[in-house]
Image (tube, rainbow, N blue to C red; front, side):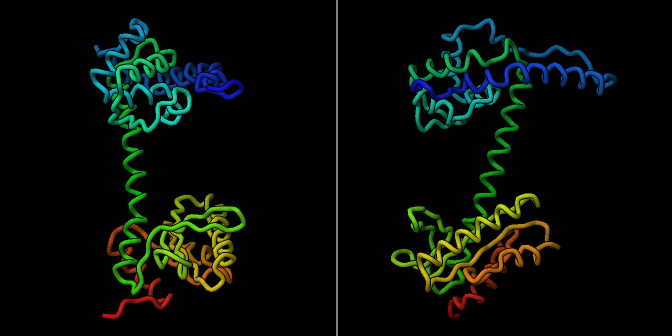
Length: 274
């Protein structure tokens, strides 16, 4: 890492004392809160403090799948490994590492590992991060379902595109035509917390205004996922703008999405002839 730039070790130093105090407090609270439910049992424990970097590197080389729980235990993400070790494109769930890379990562992780940790606890940490990853991936597929629905019912073809205006680059989740000047741009936005509505709405409004500046004759629409259905009218009111031609709300599920997108396509006059 070039001089003057922080590494993960620097970040950990920032919070070392505070995190140690919190750990002590949480241990005390858990023991007090669950006194009658605490039992002592024999459990397998990994003694990280008793192993060398070479031992850890050998373990990672033999069982690459352990990399993710080890990284999660150390609060280290793949981007930190790339930044600090210049090892790019690492898939922490299915890593393909050379012996040299495994050794470098082992040396990087070792100072952040606890002296010991129970195997069930480490496995549970991995499960938590895996579930979070899969949920995020499932949410990401929402946009793909919408894009497929658009191309099923619309008389024009849509695909993800970018445009530039005032030196800024913007991504359009579904744009038509697939090349050349954009006639129709559709922005997709998942808003899952009430506190995010103002920020996300401003993002939609800003992108719509930029789009109209770049393509004055184009039409901009928004597809919004917002689970608080009683507030949909308020969201629509917030998104009222000369730059936005249509707004629709789409929940989950193929049928619900197809219904919502069908209504949007009708508003835009793009329904494919039957």
